[in-house]
Image (cartoon, rainbow, N blue to C red; front, side, top):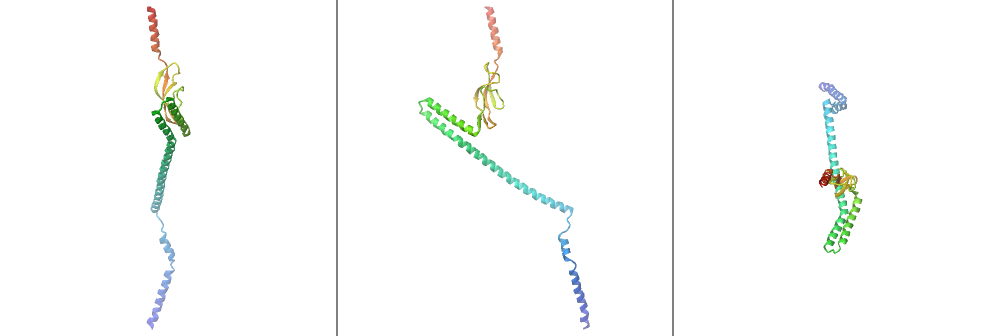
Length: 207
């Protein structure tokens, strides 16, 4: 009996000790363990990882944008070529008809009129596309839109004036598509003329 009675305080103490252990605010201990204070190095590494992920996302978005832009540019280019060819094909058809008509033609003027009609059709298409011919004959030579193929001595035109056109040039809108190839006037060389006059004077004196 005495031993049994003596054991009760130990049980109560053990029980009391257990209650004391539960009252030690376990939540605060768990909280302190779950949210430790980060060191400066760990914060820097976390910021580095965040910025790296952000840069990777930006690089991926830019790559997708570049691919979409390239595809859109190719699509616009393809449609532009298609629209231009669709305008030009009627001219090819008319030229083929003119070529067929030449084989059995007896009236040259009729063939000539047919070719001029094709050229008028080209002019109409060129106007719709914004294609303009570079002015040449009678205008001053402009190196920005003219290519001088040769110079021609003449007193009928001022030096630098275009006297003839070899190959026409064209503007597409405000942009030069092809320069015009032209012949440009230059002053007549006076040396040969003066020698000729002197020779005539000399021959007159001899007579």
